[in-house]
Length: 59
View 1 (tube, rainbow, N blue to C red):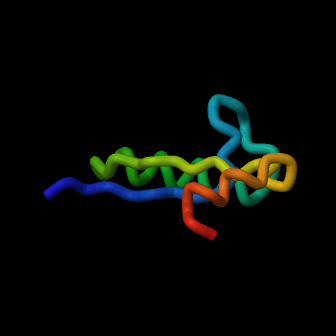
View 2: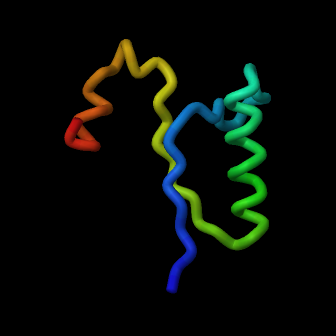
């Protein structure tokens, strides 16, 4: 059985966190990776400019 998680939200990948939400998400992903969980990321920053992201979810 594979350990996988889908993370939906802002992470500011490759950069320092710019707010509390991105810091929380970065810490959560780091901890999950330490525990051996494979994380799939769905990055929703600027979703208002790119609303087609929701077509992936059928919303």
